[in-house]
Image 1 (cartoon, one colour):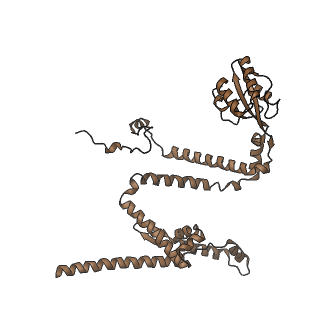
Image 2: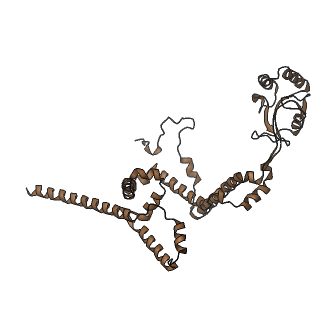
Image 3: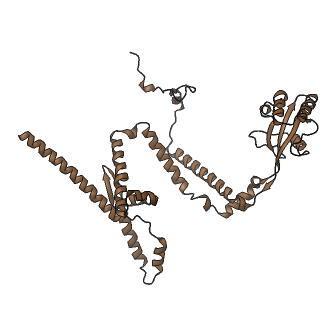
Length: 363
């Protein structure tokens, strides 16, 4: 009987403790609801009030600010060693779209209470559980935490740059003048060329191309006769080429002699005679034209702002990493990298990876 009484007493004590925690949590949530300001305050209203007759003086405004800071600093939720303040919940709710916030309740009090219970408290509890299980120190969680911190650092650095729209007109005009070639494009022509070893071979190829001036025929001739292995499998297509021989095809530069020859005929026409190109001879077909263009600074301003913002973001990130490297990076033992075990590069993603630490040592 005595043992049974003790068990009943302990059970009642645990229930009472749980009830007390529930009451405290509900009380904390109720307090948070009362202190939270869900809708952002209107700076226009404050400005109007500041200029209204009988407006309070600067010290009174300071007192109001101090009171608001104290309100936001109040702890609304505590889980283990972690706490969440009224201001933190307020800021999180401020970032929720109204239609999404409405799913937590049809009144201010319900929305705040349900969001705090269903999101804030839940996250804290699961986070505490993860820490207790040591998940924050195990892969892949530890890696994800490091990535989250890394991304947060970069976001904070980028935030100092505001946005592309904040870049001044003066900077836009300076960039435009220093990079006029980006916005003034000369006429470019699409040139297809078959490069033959001899003039006689080029004459024969040109005659065959004129006899059947189709893409299919020209492709066949290029594969059979062109010594330019970089383009012979694509019909000798050199891309759209500028007067200086620069092509829109990456890494391709065309002999200006070929370009000048192509400029003497109209779109769709062959150059009448093979063109000497180094020790070889080219059969040239002009396929099309992109007219020259010139954009004003107004037309290019959005592109310039985007470019400047990207360049400044990259420069900010680079300097940040360099500063952090100089401050924190003490040693990288590259000889240890040779000990890393990886699956074969051609093993395929479907094959399971072996973990070296899991391998059994021979007995």
